[in-house]
Length: 202
Image (cartoon, rainbow, N blue to C red; front, side):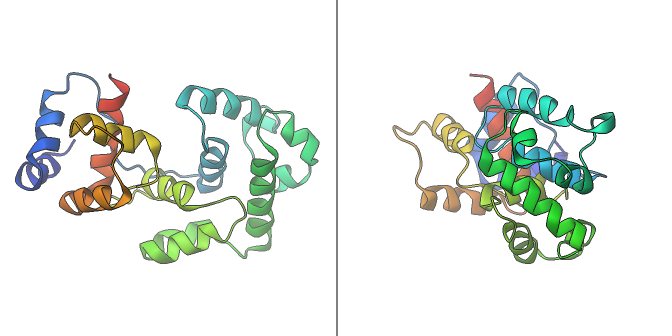
């Protein structure tokens, strides 16, 4: 984690800062930029509501449907819903990747222009796709477009991580999470990565 981020947490949230300093595992690195945004978004859709291990396994099967293990919009549209479903993904995700592929093919969604949009505009463009909600667009902004200041209040792992770090008796409310996250801005993505790491190490 960059020193400037740690210093910010030290000033604004000593509880999170101390949890990070005391953590003796591998912290997730933080936001990331991906070259192939279409593949990255498909990967995020496939991983919806799954554990990391399950998402990785199903993504591997999904990729195997395509030449060189690389899904493209054209290749996805060439397969039937049943053929896509055979990889193990739910019908809702089949419809999502097909709708995404249709929008990319028709150029009604231009993934390579999302980085030029502000956060709200990018979320709006992504969530116009069937099956893409706040969580999916938040993960995509974090780990494909490299946004440093995103936090997913609806992510169960983050809720459990906050409960653990702050020693709460119950899962935190959305309001509680939003209030905490204000202290982490403009590095909320780094905070999310730290919280996931600490939870995974329990």
